[in-house]
Each structure stands twice: as C-alpha cells, then as structure tokens.
Length: 259
Image (cartoon, rainbow, N blue to C red; front, side, top):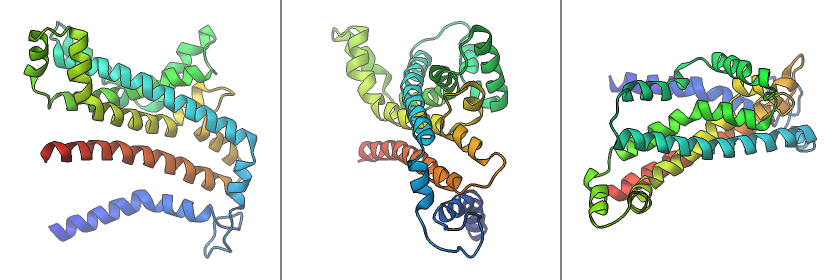
C-alpha cells in the first residue's frame, strides 16, 4: 500500500508539474517551435519580453492588482474571521455560507456576473474593477486561513485583557493581532498569488488595462510564440514563491509553538 501511494503521488506531481518544467525548458529554446531535441540555448525570448512596453504595463497592472487585492481581501477576511470567532447572532450560518460561496462558483460565472455589474454603470475596464472582482474571489481564502488560526487561541486571553482594563480595541491590538500575525501574513501572500495568477475574471473586466495572464492570451491568439513560455515561467515563479512563503510562515510559527 505504501509503494502504491508513493507511485500515485509521483504520478500526480508529474502530471501537475511536468508541463511547467517543459515550458521552462522551451523558454530557453532557440527554435521558435517547441520541438525535441532542443535546437540550442538562448535567452532571446526573455530579452524580447523585457524590451516590450506592453509586457511592463501588464506586469505593473498585475502587481498593483495583486498587492491591493491582498491587502483588502486580508482585511475583510480578518474582520469576517473575527466576527465568526467572537460573536453569535441570528443567521450566522447563512452569513458564513454566503461569505465562503465565491470559491465554489465557476470562475466564468463570477466573471460574467462582475461584467454585468460593472458595465451598465461604466465601471468595467479599470484596474480597480479587477481589484474589486479579485477581492470577492480571494477574501474567503483569507477568512479561512485566519479563522483556523483563531481556533487555536485561548478564549480566556481576550477576556483577561478586558478584566485588566484594556478596551476592546486595545485587546484586539495587543492580543488578537499578535496571535494572528502569521496567518495574516500567510493570507497576504496567498491571496496575492491567487490574484496575480488569475485569468478568467481579469479577462472579462480588465478592458485595456490587461494583466499578465490576459497579455499572454493576446500573444498566443493565432500564433505560436515562445514569449509565452518565458512569461509563463516568470508568472509561475512569482506565484509559487508567494505560496511557499505563505506556507513557510505557518510552518515556522507552528514549529516555534511546539518547541
């Protein structure tokens, strides 16, 4: 059973990561077409995209969108997680179900809904409209991460702070925020990664303010361009770095607490 599990995991990781490795290799292939064996090593495709002003505009938009989305989504996720942790009220289950609903909806449906909402009032095609759409998509992830962290806190700590004269805001600042800091940082990195890599919603609402994934689509329409492999490698590298940092923050925090 252990051998079978190992084979299954290797096959699973191979299925997921092998295309990414192939794309990375072909981003250094001197031939325009992805053929094996590779005809030679070159960095011309990276030099081409770095010299392209459209690439830098898309990269800037992606950075702005992912950074703003991460901050707003994490703030909303923290507020929702703390509300769930601290308060009991009528309709709480429905409230939480609605909050956690977006990740369960197909992205194409969310994209169409956002377009239908923004377009009639002239709000589509703006960078901040992508930020708003991505915030809706990523806030549930932030809420889930921070809520898991709040599950580990001693509920008497906050009450003890109140009994010692701290106001609710000071107890929040001195007790809750320090305890949830690793989850907040993890949420920032994870939501930034999800936003930076998201394509479907951004394609519908971005207009001329395209992000990197949307820029990639424009390149591949009707042609085979090795620039896509180079851009895809950069996007994957940034996204996986953010996710790894997020996981390391949680891991090292748990290690320190266990020690």
